[in-house]
Length: 183
Length: 182
Image 1: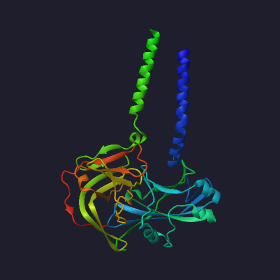
Image 2: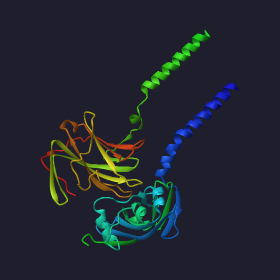
Image 3: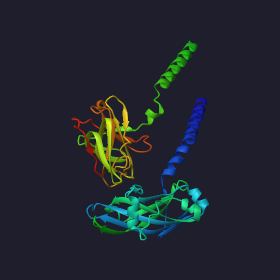
Image 4: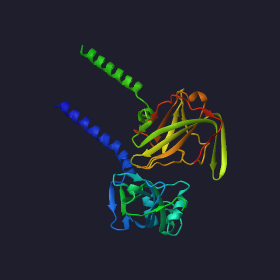
């Protein structure tokens, strides 16, 4: 009986050690993933104090590369500076029907393409919350490169390190245009 | 007799503990990415990406256009350029390339070739799309023959896979000047 008691104590201590050492790893993991998705009913939604509105979603396919397309998404963000601080940062990713995750492009050519696709020919740079700290409102522009087959129906996820694993999701059906390379 | 048995058990325990302490791998070797070898067609399937080694070229100097200006970089060693075709599986990714030299040294890509489109230093790979990219190394001549190329996802490679390509059967002929086109 005494041996069983010691064995039980050892097992309980082992379980406590697992929980204590694993908790910080689990928190790190949760800050990378989005499994608590809040779906917005329309083009506007709110998550943890940050109001997000999808104002533009345009896609283009270059005629010479019909298997791939570029998706431009413009967002208006509205929140207090305290909310922006709580979010820490902003990640706007596109999700496919099979769980694919497309992240925004950041290379040198992005700004020119965004200016071509935006209704006002301006590039407001990818999602960041610095504008919210100054004025409480900001506009951000994202450009994604993804297969043409995925363009018709995608989901936009907005989250920050301060909100994850929670994320705000919008169903997007962009207007797809096909253009010739020389245009 | 009982004391002798306890002493033997304690000595055995101490011996086992000492053996475990001396054979315990360090953190880096425990968590470095595990190797996945490309097949005979040069296609490797990593956990996060798929890659194909299309070809290798070598040169004593490289030229390219950056912001409308022609740039030439030469070297006292050899530039080795690996042409790759890469696609991400589930999430947009950047890929890192390492040349495992014949002597066992590991070489990162040269950062002297800046602002060239389609190099792995700046390229992102998207799910569902395959894109071509270049990995440019600056290597001593004796590190190329018998060396191999390894690709891994940039960032935190713990418990991830690294795709290893077999050493080429014939080495690429060294050109005096290689032009990299966008």
